[in-house]
Length: 542
Image 1: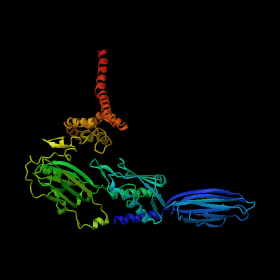
Image 2 (image 1 turned 135 degrees about the vertical axis):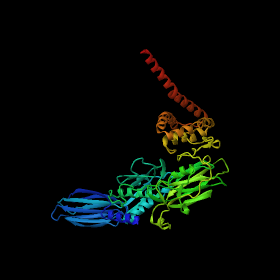
Image 3 (image 1 turned 30 degrees about the vertical axis):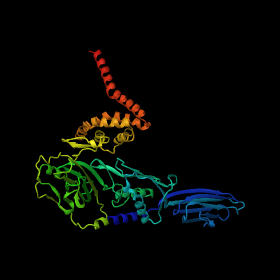
Image 4 (image 1 turned 60 degrees about the vertical axis):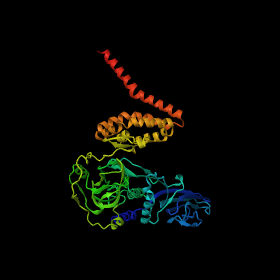
């Protein structure tokens, strides 16, 4: 029904739309015994509407020939005024020739007006990032949407950017209110995701990216914003729809983990999948109304969950279902088994909102959303066995493991690991500063023996304190800002390595020692020098 409303609204828009119009008027003087020509380039499918006025001489007339690229020329005598139109059968230059060679003495004055209605667009599409394959068919879906609304429209892939009428570029996140942007009729920028879901960047769904693309193409076609909330040209995206959200956690036996769903709807439906690396012992999984279920469980009191059979499962190592009627704020609650094959195991939680299109809704049989109910059994474990920190971030960062209640370096990944402090400081592993540190480690230092040796030793020292610092940052925004201020000069100095070549052991050692000395100057010598200088100045006034 929603699609029909959108399509009906779109048809009303197109009824009053004349396309992407390029209009021009030329005043031409054609001398006796001569001719003048006007050249107009049209793509196949473009419409040209023209109007000709003639004055001068005794008859106010002139011979007109329109030379078409395919040779199907048209000619005739224009007397005083003439209007016409045609749709270009092929791409190329169309020539209007005004012939006054048969007049011996009279000049003719031509008023030539025309409108080129662009119905054909050659599109150059920027290559999608390899992590955004969910948007592979977005351009096709959006252009087919407009072609179905107006059969005169044609869209073709341009062989190169130079040959394109319209360029489409992708933006990982705009970081502002808009999610797409059209510059005139030659450039479209389309957002692929945002960080509005729990503070972490998440991809939009393919349908949502397609919706953005359709809206921006509408601007290219000449359509303005509409006040109709059902119109594709309504200026505000009323409901954000995210795509596949995937999280990985390293958990221990008897541990609980809550992962919220990403949605802006009051009630929605989700596909979810949970799996563990443990080949023998599994987990219980529940779709719950809120994180309060985790808090209740940790306090060893009954907790709420959605009671439909597709919304929970017990004793699985892999579980995947569709759960409907989930209210905003809900999520997936996983409880690990009381026994595991290893002290720690990795679980992967995936979730994706099911688009509320006609076909998806018809494929289900649920008429009413399931209501949360109180779980009938009390948890069997004691509070000491089931203790969980009252926050979502209960797992260790990549590259570390839980040991004696603290996150320490994973010995199986001594050369890798996450940039814990930088990730906590800048909010995401996808932040440019974190990516820069990771690329420096993986692309430069780890490719040489001396660099690899340095990273191994550094990791032993770094991961002895970084998990604690990262936890403090998450709990205290003021402390996080102080850390950001402190490490920004370090990260800036390391960015120098992105502009130099380090292909040998000597170069890595040389540049590495130079940077260490530079940071010693910034963090130790300079502050000490400034302190001594201030102390001496102050002493003179005592």
